[in-house]
Amino acid sequence: MAVPDYKLSAVLCGHSLDVRCVATTKEFCILSASRDRTAKLWHPEGVKDFVNVVTYKGHRNFVSCVCWLPPCEAYPDGLVVTGSNDNTILGYNLQDGVIQVTLEGHENAVCSVTPGRDSGILLSSSWDSTAKVWNINASRLPPLSLKGHQAAVWAAVELFNNTYATASADKTIKLWKKDGTVISTLTGHTDCVRALAVANPETFLSCSNDASIKHWTNKGQCLNTYYGHSNYIYSISMNPVVQQGFATCGEDGAVRLWAGGDCVRDIRLPVQSVWSITCLDNGDIVTGSSDGIVRVFTKDPARYADEATLKQFEEDVAKMQAATQQEIGGFKLSELPGPEVLLEPGKADGQTKLVRRGTNVKCYSWSAAESTWNEIGDVMGTPPSSEGKTMYQGKEYDFVFSVDIKDGAPPIKLPFNKTEDPWVAAQAFIHKNNLPQVYLEQVANFIITNAKLDSQPVSSNNGFADPFTGESRYVPGSGSVPGLPPPSHADPFTGSGAYTTASTTTSREKMLIPHDAYI
Image 1 (tube, rainbow, N blue to C red):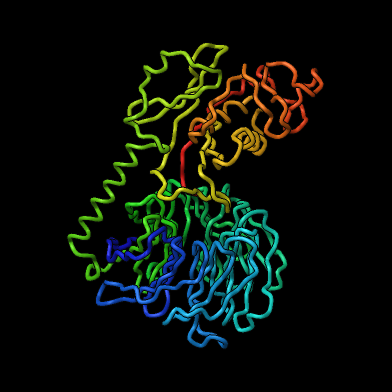
Image 2 (image 1 turned 135 degrees about the vertical axis):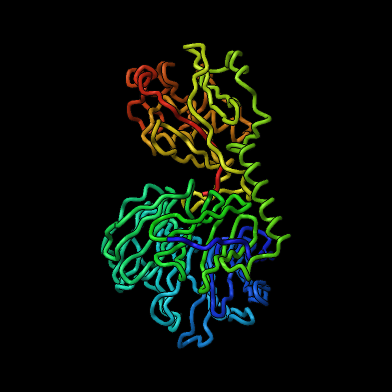
């Protein structure tokens, strides 16, 4: 189905940090929530402009989500509802920004708030692995808690068949009865499920960090899977003026418009992350992004931005794309050495080097036994982050590396904070992904090098303290570990049999291809 050409209509500046969520209210007003600890109400002015008329304050940390709760018995004027990393939910008077209600109960950041189908019902979800159902008309009563997920719950919605649906970082969707009993657990996504949208009375949509969108029946049958984004998909919204239409946005800095399951339009933004998207009743599309700006796109030529604004937007997009091509995985291509650097022998077994080959970056590892540099993969990257922290599965990290361990398999994530011991992080990564123990040193050294830590990469002929026990760590091929029975080659982290170099020489495949990215 053809979709009219969408162009930029308005640029709403006012937030000082990422806009993490956008929503709509009555009379085509726009709500935005930001990491600057505020939410804002934008009222239409004239044909295409918007003005910030109210700023909602009161949270002690990032405001991660916002919604409009329609009028109900307790609040006949309705409420602007926000959720925050301070673990609380606040309800404000729409017009003057005065706090009307505070909801406490989540034990970690609140990452979504959504009105239920009944008057005064609010759904929230949190990094504490739960969703909650609140009755605003009786806010003193404890909420219904939906417990069962194993990781952060990113979204919660009420479906038309009197059930709730929740999406989680544990890669599943759960369907719940109104009493909080789990009906079923839906699997199929291979990474965090980030958002849900009710498509019609019979079906709903989900989007995920696996760059896919799935179409489900309310009973949990997957009808279809759609692909179009090249990176994580953060948000999804139904488009009321397009039959079977919806819009998505994500980490690839793009908005994609869909009709009948086909991606029919692609709008590029001059940002790394488009965090949130919503559609107005007239079909206009609103986005919130990592540059702190709210943008409105329209298919109506009467609401297109002026020529100067459109030209500036196109130039900004072109600059962003050029910067992306010139920088991969946080490394500037112009500053990386060429293949001639591989003529020099490595200084330690497992040492890694990034090498520029044309417009690509290759990662190599030095093998002391073979006296050669072995190619271990391509470095895949995204534009540099606009924030110092990266979110991954409900937690913030200084780095989230992508690791390509096998041809044809999707990369897996290695999160790391500078306050952590790189050897502990490397071992946790190996155990979580069932990788051979022989990779411990290579993974740890890569973290040390690319996180620019004070520690120097350690070779296999150097001693090193076991980060869990304080004893000398096991190095494949180095013999026994002090304090452990010599014949067992025991893994100092688990006590189980360790892998040896000989046992993995035939299975060493493409691995360790890191880059920084928002999650």
